[in-house]
Structure formats: C-alpha cells, structure tokens
Length: 442
Image (cartoon, rainbow, N blue to C red; front, side):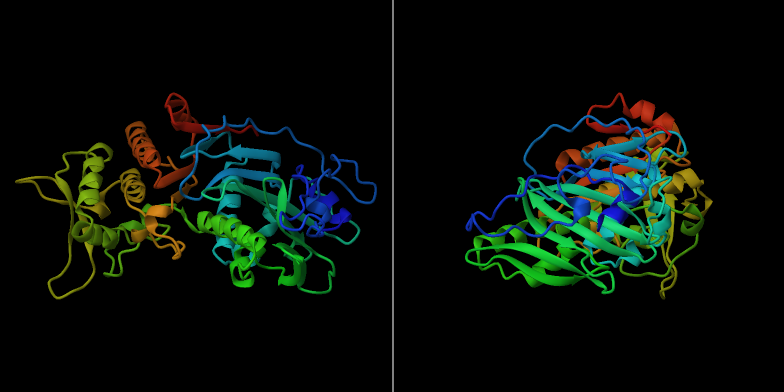
C-alpha cells in the first residue's frame, strides 16, 4: 500500500527490525510494503495525502501471565486503524471480556477477530468483510485516487514461539489486500506489497535461506498470503522450515475459532436429525443434544448439571424425543419423576441462550460446525469461542455460571473465550481471577 492510501487509514504500528536470513546474512530481505514498514510517521506527518485525526486509545487489559503455549493461540489482537479503534492492542487470555458503552467498539473488535479467522480458514476478502466500509476508520478521508482502507493484525503464540501477522486492506474503491507481513523475533518471514494497481495480485517475498535467500512470486490480492504458504513452500531449507512453522501456527490458531450467537427464535422448532454439529446460531441445538446424549455421556451430564443453575424449576436431565420411524428431533428438560418434561420451545430466550453457550463451552470442535486444522490432533489445538453480546438476555446467575464454565475450560487449555459483555457481567467478572478485562470508552 503506498503512502497516499496509508494516509487514509493512518500510520502503521512500529514493526520489528528487518533481520537477514540466518543461513545467508548477506541475502536481501523481503520487500516491505510502505504501509507496514518500520518507522511509519505519526498521524498528520504525511505530506501527500489526507490523514485521520488520532483518537484516544482504549484502556488495555493487563497482559495475561506469560507462559509457554503448547497449542497455537491468538494472544494479542491489534487494530491499528479499524472502525473506532486506532493504535489499539488487546492482550487475550484464556477468558477475555470486552466491556464499554454502546459505540465503544466491542463488536468491531470481535468482528476483526472473526474476519482474521475467516481469512486464515481460506475465505476471500469479500467473505471475511461483507461490509468493508463499516471497518474504515472513523473520519477517514479518501486520497486523490478515492482510496480508503483499514489495518489489523494479531500475535499467535505456540510451539514455534510468538508470531506476528499484520494486514493492510484497501476497502475503497475496490476491496483488496495491499500489504501483509508475517514476522517472528524481529525477522520478517513474509511480506507482500501492491506494486501494480492494475493487476489483481500482490508481489510476495518470503524467506528461503541458503544461496537463494528470498523467494518472490505474485499472490492473489483477495486471500491471506500466510494461509497459502504451506502450498507454496517446500520446506527443504532451514529458512523455509521456519516460514512453514510460523505460517502453520498462525493458520491453526485462526482456524480454531467458532463465532457463536445463539438465536432463541431459531432454536424452538423441532429439527431433522443430522450430523450433530452445532451451527453458529445454535438453531440445531436439539440435534446436537441427541448426539451428545449418546456419544459424550460425561459432557452431556455436565451440561445437565449446568442446566440446573441456568433453567427455572427442577432439572433432572436433558433428553431428546424423536418419532420411532424417524423425523424431527425435539429436546426436552427432564423435570424428574411424576413431572412432565418441558420442551425447549417453551423455555425463555435467556434459558435457550444459556443452554447453547454452556454446550459450546463444555464440548469442542468435534460437535461444532467448524473446520479445524486436520494436520494436528484435537488435543494439540485450542478452540476459541467468539461471542458478541455474550450475556444478552441472561440473568446474573446464568452469566456467572457461564463464566465459571469458561474459566474451567480455559484452565485446561482446550477452550478459550473472547466475548463482549454488558456492564453488569463486567462488574462481576472484574472480581474473578483469570478473567482479562478490556474496558473501552466511546
């Protein structure tokens, strides 16, 4: 991305120093797009294009205690120029909650994470950003070519160590990636830059090592280059293996994300039996309960135990009903001996949302409609649940029980939670050890 578009989205965060390949100290380093280069000027310093006034950075959460990560996980979300966020960096722990008034950017932060996850899973820019203009920084003014864009990134920690991914996206007049950088320990492993606006590609350069030093090739401008590297890099040199390890770690972490927004209006009807993988809106909750009841007895029992806290009245268990000859499946609350069962259709919206979120926090990728990396065993991956409006429609006891489940799952390292919550839940969460709070201001 050139200086004029960079002015429209604002300056990039300071980048690590460019390091030469370990096996070839004299080899040239990959080209770096100006939008991602080290030492980008402060807001207003560009002389050839409009700028965006700086905004106060939101309060940052305290960094979680540093410890080795056996599973690839996103430990920081960076929104350098994204919606209302400017120069923002949010440390992410096993349980991270975003709080703040309406318009403070809670949903924008979760949307950025979800978009990165989509790109890491192979989605196109149009799929990851269906409304890219909504992500352009507030008050951004187009340059002479009518271009505006946004910038975001993340850090993924894991067996390979911390790896940074930074991305610059042009939103207007055409949606395209104009700069991407993958780096580790101050060394840039992959850099892409838009060299010819007339072509739908970016020029990419990645570390090779040995006599070659750097490999250069065009990559499509509508997909994440990092996700394409495993198909392009052979891994025959130490430099290539370093690039592959970093890229695969980032991709595994981004693919292990499940955006969840239970919709009670869609959860009340009976559903046809299927493969029992929970959808993002949880409309097929009854079918998933049918599966967990038969295949995951321990977790199903834990869910029934949670239902005793989150649902009104006595709860002896969770059951499902289906016609003998096949047909739609209905889930019910078992009320105990001599009491009629209650169909989920008769539960309140808060009860349905509670059951769905509890199910997600107690299970894993195997019962969720997602596509985790097949190259690693599930025990080597950590699921991250994204939940905007996590406590919407829930009472105090339901929110507290879900936070308890999230902390238990997070302590085991298998499931992480990143959610936006209201002030009531935030006030209670601030007193809980293990919860990382991100307090935003409008």
